[in-house]
Image 1 (cartoon, rainbow, N blue to C red):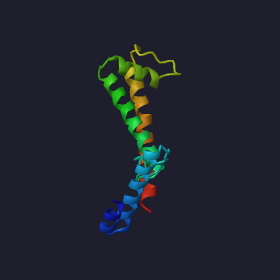
Image 2 (image 1 turned 45 degrees about the vertical axis):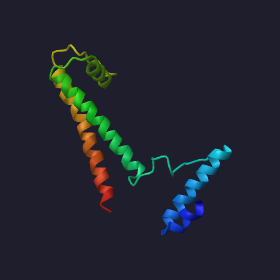
Image 3 (image 1 turned 90 degrees about the horizontal axis):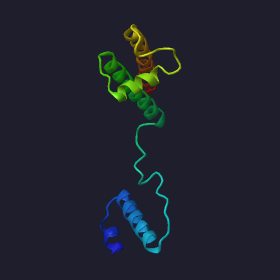
Image 4 (image 1 turned 90 degrees about the vertical axis):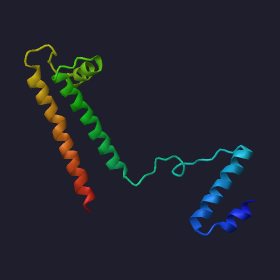
Length: 128
């Protein structure tokens, strides 16, 4: 059965895929464990790891900014309030202070500047 598939394959990559599939089948039949690292895991992509990490940081910072803006506009849902408390952790800021909107605006500016810096870093290294 394998011979018919190999004879029908025209390209080397097709032959490699057929042989890989046959090898996996044989290993499953005999009960051997096969490491599929890098091949079938789906983690390998064309995007470099450093860029993916920076993009994840940008996504987290944007989520934080969105939740802080929601709180500033009057949304007092528990998840939003929890995020705002975490954002102000380590400071003596109470959420019931009268000048909380000013402090929120200042706190929103920090992740915005970080996002701008991370975006510049991505653009700087992708130009080359």
